[in-house]
Length: 350
Image 1 (cartoon, rainbow, N blue to C red):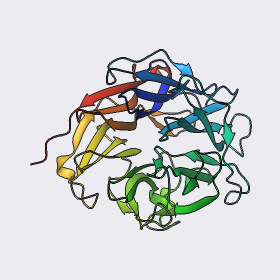
Image 2: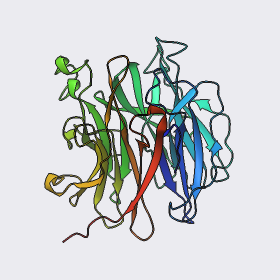
Image 3: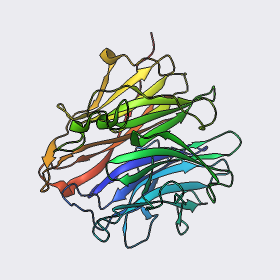
């Protein structure tokens, strides 16, 4: 999909079959803090085999990253992203969330506007849009946001809009244990959140302070559910093992649930699991290994960086899955980060 300092993609499938994708341009695993990042958009009309030339969606002089797409019923596309300002304001490193709009399939984009999170984050804005948002049948937009008042200890909220993202008069707490999460709505109306949970804060905030800081934070993916359009949420339940993050969840057309996630222990890889009972169980013995050529780097600040991750999946009309993730083209060059895609078909249920 994209090479040369590219990473963290998202995709939406439009009604006519065209795929629109976003990713970070300027994503360099060796650069901390990041400098010169922006969000680019590409399109595919052949199921992800080829992609158009990119267009730039964000045009600020800052680092625009974590840009994830959502399609509204009228065809409008929204891109929710944050700005990384650590090189300018070290005490306010992550600012947002911001939203911009396209009315022509991602070819041109509006100026961004800031979602007001001051009520829950008065020292902010410290917000980042999550990896997937929900549009209800009546057009209501559920925008999922991780609030980072303390870096690396986010709180997940859902912001509700009835005017296509112009205003968000209502918000609700999902959990104080996660951010960088993914969301999917089932045919029953139940909404599932695939949460990147902080091991230090599970099963409650501060439960394991020994896991909070160090060379590598301990996170894992868990599941929460809402049956009232996002207003209340169940207690999270673990799904993956430690440092199998971040992940993406997708409700398939055959009723099954698919999770794809990065694995940050050996083998560093992209893996998948499928649930046949609405997310109640995830057979660990039936994991799918999708890609396995990742490695781990030690940054100059002593923290680990992982050279493969952040998968995002969509289902095509023929039932095939298109999964995208980032990895290094050259394991010895942190600037060679690229976005790869994998077209595959989930095993038939027996």
